[in-house]
Image (cartoon, rainbow, N blue to C red; front, side, top):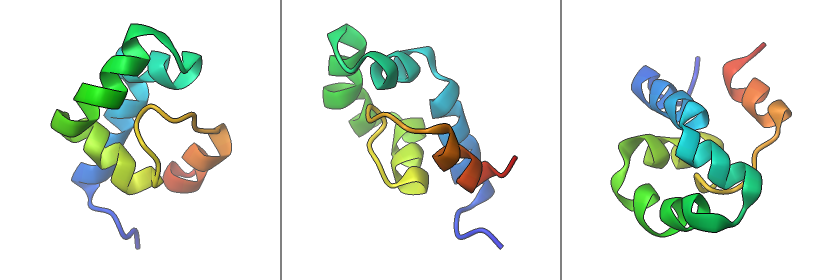
Length: 73
């Protein structure tokens, strides 16, 4: 049994697929990084769910192993 709700898991997955958040995690600089770091993670419920599920901020890099640990295969 997961310690996260289905809604949190779905929102975190949406954040993983979000083009702005994905670019911020990958490049670690530029407008997308600035936007997610200072604005988006404070107002976006998807970014907030990402932080709860993965234990890191929406703009911080994440490995495939960490994703697999939460979602399985």
